[in-house]
Image 1 (cartoon, rainbow, N blue to C red):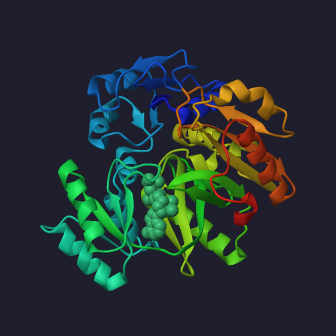
Image 2: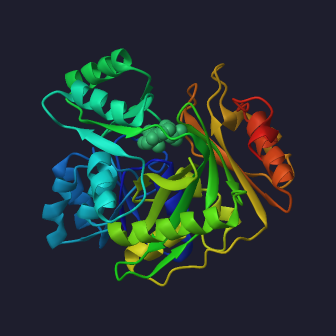
Length: 384
Ligand code: ADP
């Protein structure tokens, strides 16, 4: 398997590849990339370098991805010599939010009301849209955004004008969405083979702060009908997208509806808990899916799982220096990605399994706190 990109997702996929005896090669833009540090087979180059992609393809049977900052057009010429999974058309949906929204709308998948601002006067278009759904509205960059970068909640024409001017200068297409009054953000991971077998892990609750996922909680603590609806929608999305390997479907529960926020055609932060928390992890099932192998079971290994992300602290402290402290927390599964510590950079995560939702969450936060990550919002009991 060749993996385009060498971040933490590739690094965790390599662990699963090692267990299965699958030989993996990563395409790394930098020698310090999280997966490049632990993989003996590395092609050095940028994901938009056609020659580097061709070299990676030459070395493997199946090409897959650590991120979606890839031009699907560059992959098409490779199809003669290698299986690209997910296929370029499916990958294209997670590259371009406007294309994704339109495709899911045409398939009848519930989403926030949206409009793509590709007309002659995007500001007029946004203003007319807001007149229909009411301010605030959400402006999103169709391409290139991540972790809330490229998402702006704007409360009036003047604020919208600023974002639209900024995006116009960068040549980025925007879409506008109705603002959802969110009760909970959810995610479902689905694993799928090229022939359409698919399995899904239980729906999880993701807790975001400033557009960044801080923690993932299982079970999601939702009414049974919301759980069923989220899992049913995610299954349909995987089919519509034609995913191979893991597809992450991020959803909103709000305004009395479950709607799709966005998708990622790869393993995702909202599924890291599966490494210890499920019979088969998202990383192993991604490999199984892209290789067309039988998919593993997605059942929980404990009634409750909490996974908390570790970020670089404002004081520049490296969590790796505090590993001993975190490992003293009973049941804390600590993952550090080997990335250089910088304030606010996602550097790892901690997962705890147990029987009580409050207890697993408190232990995961305790370990994350010892690694230098404090909860960014008041008492952590709030979200449970
Ligand atoms: P990214 O691709 O950067 O992760 P998202 O589309 O997931 O961006 O948006 C980031 C966050 O912005 C979401 O987690 C959610 O909190 C908020 N958000 C996005 N879309 C909406 C919406 N339509 N209504 C309300 N909040 C939204």
